[in-house]
Image (cartoon, rainbow, N blue to C red; front, side, top):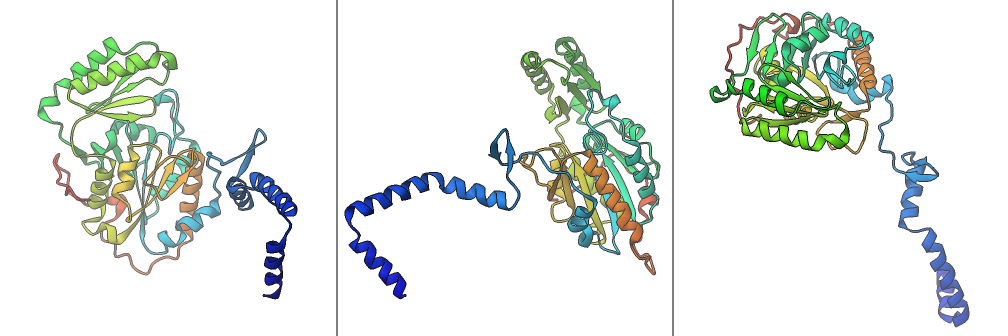
Length: 358
């Protein structure tokens, strides 16, 4: 206290010229060591600030993940006893994005791990894609798992039974008309239309950027005029029927069909997807699943619990799942009721009631 009193007394008695010199030095120092300087110093110290072209910047690119990272993320959640349900998108999640859907093949190692996981008694797998259900089934080509296409409007269960969400009657004849209109007016400069049965996807990835605006705008106008909702995808527009159904509601339907009405109490769920359509599932399963958004930037807003930077990270996730499930101690009894890979549910009708409140 004595030292503080002496310093204060000296400051009060300091000559004017000395006080002026000291204040000028303080102002010069604070111009350099401002709030921005202290923030960057702190971020550098914790390793979240990087240098690009001589400038300190906050990184926007996601960093790679390691196998052991998933033990921290998921180890306690998955645990030692529960059935694990994997709900996975296809394009951009299991398979890298490609210039054409036919080129987006699943990497061999990813497929081999999925095949081994599909044969584990406590693992249930569903692939939920924007592709048609027959197409995504052909692309993955693994028996004993569930496939959902057109964002869940079509589903094939492991036992072969199918679910198709009904199309509004007034729109049934409009799909063909819209297809023809898009082909005649908007399929130019590399743009094309994918006919997926219950919906259409207008692809413009290969159109030069400077030529996109007028034809994409016209495609939007045609889709709206036909009475369909517009879904935004990777350099594509999807014509969706105006029904209350998406990947979130489809995920809940799949889980309830496989495990019964008390599914949320009996299983652990991991959801991974890269698209805005996957956000519907991430939101619907919030608090009941651990979700990953596959995205290269950590600035992308998401309802997911974590972000993964690439399809390689998804492969790393699957490696961890296989390792964790293989190392679990065998249970004395299996009281789960329904075997996920060999469901005993009855063939599904075309109309299934899902409550409005999920």
